[in-house]
Amino acid sequence: MTFRLTALTDAVPAALSRRLTWLASTPDGTPLGSAVLSLFTSPGQAHLSALTLNVHPAERRRGVGSALLSAAAAAAAEDGRGSMLAQAVEDSPGDAFLTARGFERALILDYARLDLTGPTAPSAADEAPLHPGYRLISWVGSCPDEWLATFTVSRTAMDDMPMGDAVFGLILWDEARVLAVAKAVADRGELLHTVAVVEEATDTVVGFTELVLPADRSGDAQHYGTGVLPAHRRRGLARAMKAETIRWARAEQPGITGLLTDTADHNVGMITVNRALGYRTTHRSIEFRLPLPS
Image (cartoon, rainbow, N blue to C red; front, side):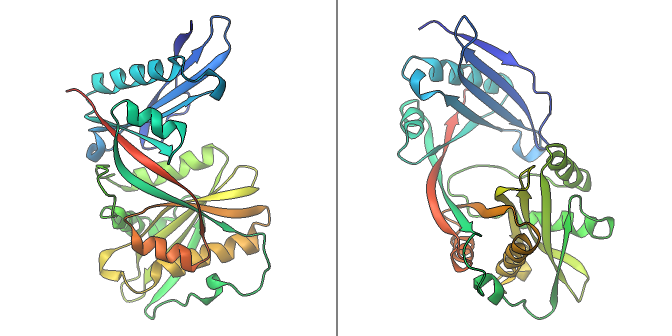
């Protein structure tokens, strides 16, 4: 099959990475597939890249995916990356494609959804009391100045998430990066809603959970990070924060029909929280890793 690869310029750089994109097309310009390579910019992730690869089902098994993968892998290696991550639904054609090309299985992700369209009777989210000595706060968009410093510190709560054999490295958070992520969400027209838990004795943020709503404020919203600093765990804080997010979505966002989350299957604690709040598994995906030549 004759096709060509075209490298595209990323007009809107991501907050935590820079991206390279390739489009595969026929000589007359008909799209066949695409590849997006993310080169992470945090110093703690300088070894890492991530690939998103898609080929139209009718055009598979003709070398398009292999050509896109080859271009992305070469670019990642040239940039000094030691490995490349890619994800595929378990037992899907993508799973078979990546396995056949030397990718190693590093992690299984549990994807779950909470349906918000059902009866409005009391739910598990209404029965998640807050541990004494803490209070919940929330905001939309960028973190308010008064909480920015301790909210930034609280983001290290995700540094020790159980992640199997996936070597993601550390995202080194500072206030500028926190604000840049919020701006990136706003620039896409989406809405970032954050619930944080404050320790009353110190008046500092010790945990957080984030939800991103689509630009049209309809359909499913996506959970981003959820974390609690180690000294404050095993007190039900993650569950209380997520429950508050659910209550807010139900009360303030009638167009949102469901909440989506994905969790490493090693992270038993967070999966237990999700199940208790009514989230149900929709599918599982494999996080693959390909070592790259130095």
